[in-house]
Figure 1 (cartoon, one colour):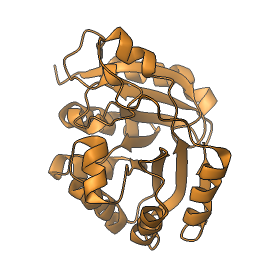
Figure 2 (tube, helix red, strand yellow):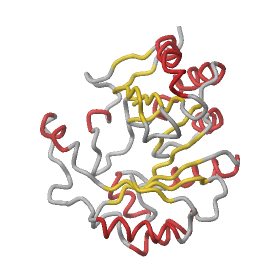
Figure 3 (cartoon, one colour):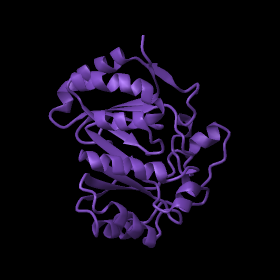
Length: 246
């Protein structure tokens, strides 16, 4: 028996994590500790919240949903961070592809190695969440360096296969105009980037910190105003033709 994915949860009819209607698999474990993480219970690889998802069960779920996918939908592996379980995923993705499903990988890009390259190669779409473009701010927000993120973006670009970029807009942390401009300049010439998504910061996961006995790092930080979101969108639109606000 091969490796088995440990997952946090499943969204059956997802419409926000890739094209069409999607089965979204939230994989357990993440190397980042983002200040605004809304699923802190997905961070630890070994967790009482996690369950196993054998490949056979995944394929069975996909087959039941196949009529809803039509020509756009498919499966998205998200997290947590899917690349922390690269070994298991590398056993799953070829079987999923052989069964004819569109594969999206929703990743923070924090791990860069040969196996992650292989995951990218098996994926029809990469959704890369670039938390910040400034190295110091990136480390402050996530606890990790930005270098692997940039290497993953560059690797995907060289393959010529589709990529979406995501950016969480947090007032006082990720909304600095000079860094939004820099973000656009870094990725603006990427031919693989089909879409840029702005995700306004929210506080929907704060209660999980309380339940886990942890302090929420961004107490007092408000969600961005419509004006703040529009300002960020206008900057990105200088560099990208398809900017979407979630």
